[in-house]
Image (cartoon, rainbow, N blue to C red):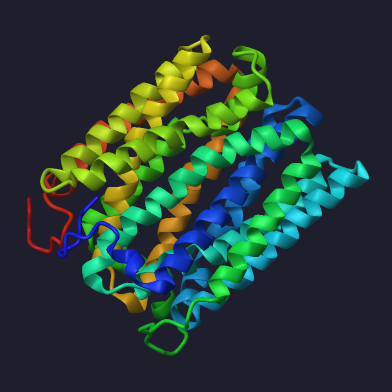
Length: 415
């Protein structure tokens, strides 16, 4: 993580609006993790089907893809703080619906998929708004520091959230959804406490040219294109989150608490790397670290798929999270520092689709492949694919591989 010019590792928190944003994002991410663990485990309990686990990811991803040309433009033209607050309220309503189905004993795949579809629409609009709001809350000199803390916030939630989700679900699904609902309400309240930030926008006429501005920027900046697409295909192939209920119950013979530990393990690795990078920021060879991280992610995925011992599986997942954190940090820093504010929402909408494809669509890939060939081969094949992608992208994007410091935009030709 790049330390700001002032050398103050807490520089972003000197700005009250950012502090509120940080804690709101943490609470929202925490709630999402609880809901994710609970829905996955409850779905597998009710159906025993891996295909339904895959569909959970697909229904949450599809809105980001379908609405991509709309959500980014909305984030660039309208108040990003208000958009985020509205989306958090909608997320709370979706969680309330899951709670209602559970209390009524009516939890079944298709009503749940309908709720998750609305959840996906909410996240499709919130993603570009949140990603674009953060740079409006701090001066440019503190931007890299805020990105570092943003990543740490999400990763910390990914550690505590799944464990809490597993424990809460162990008490009852009703308790789990109720806690998630309360957290989303608190997150919305914090966002509303943020003063309306300065937001640069170009009120250009609505046109296809305006809508496609994010695509044009990414296509013209090959470093950003390479970083985003590398993450897309690497995690699309290597992601194994959707199959964790299968590994927890059928392969490693763990209960809901074990699922929580498996879900938390990648976050433990990620936050450890975040802390390390806060003390020893990347100052050179950032592109090389990116590709090494992706390759390590693939190797750890293979190890997880082959393991039948709980501690080995957890260790492999910790390494996966640590490696993925490198990719996340490099990619998000490049996007934030290199993208003009007036097109940031549209660029982040495209990025969100890539991230969503690598996560939710990756879950669908894992679930459907596991249905055909089994959970273990599905994970191992995905890990091998990630290693292949790392090698291909290293050759196809030499400028990305040779990127040095992330402290400032690198617009000079580095080939």
